[in-house]
Structures are given as C-alpha cells and as structure tokens.
Amino acid sequence: MRVIIRTFFRGLRLVLAPILLAQEKLSTPKGKSRAPEAQTEVDAACQELALYQFQSCPFCIKVRKEIARLNLTIDTRDAKNDPPHREALAEGGGRVKVPCLRIEQDDGKALWLYESSDINRYLNQRFGAI
Image (cartoon, rainbow, N blue to C red):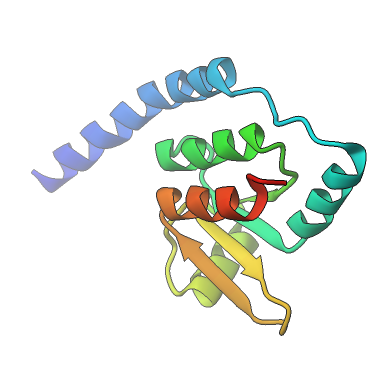
C-alpha cells in the first residue's frame, strides 16, 4: 500500500511541476524600482543571502516571487539536484527542508531561516522600505 501511495504522489508531482513552473513565469511580479545608488546598496546586502530551494516547490515559488517583486539578487541553490548544496543545508540548517534562507551575519555566523512566510517577512522588513 505504501508503494502505491508513494507512486501516486510522485506521478502527481510530475504532472503538477510543469504547471507550477509555468504559472510562476506568468505571474511573477515586476521588480521594485529603486534609484541606482539604492539598488547598489541592496545588491551588496544580498551578497550575504542564499536561498536553498527546490525548483517546483510551491513554497519556494512563493519566496522567489517575493524576491522578484523586491528586485533582489539573491543566490538560489538547488538543494534537490546539487549534492553539495543539499549537504550544506543539512549540516548548517540541521535538516533538508526548503525553502531556507541562509543569512550571513556580521560576526561570520550563519542564520538559517525556514518557512516561506518568515522568509518573505524578513525580506520585506529588510528591503521593502529601501
């Protein structure tokens, strides 16, 4: 029974993945417009951030849309198909769960932020007013 259920959900993911990705492309908002100096400041701050994600995960799509809306240049790392990134997520964050935003702090330590709503809230608080 377990094999049948697992096979069903894998098949469902195979069918839904292209639909989710097409929907993301069609509905991604236009990026926020900033003065060149402000955008340079934002781009420099984004160098401290990395998003660990799966390409067709609906929660990852939600975060990527917010990144596009805020016009951020955050490095996206595929934790599903790239073993070094998957390993870094497991070691640093403690578990392989996406989306996860890695935030490099001033003291050199990394903060691992899980949950799409928490990530979007953080991005809006940090970059929404700039």
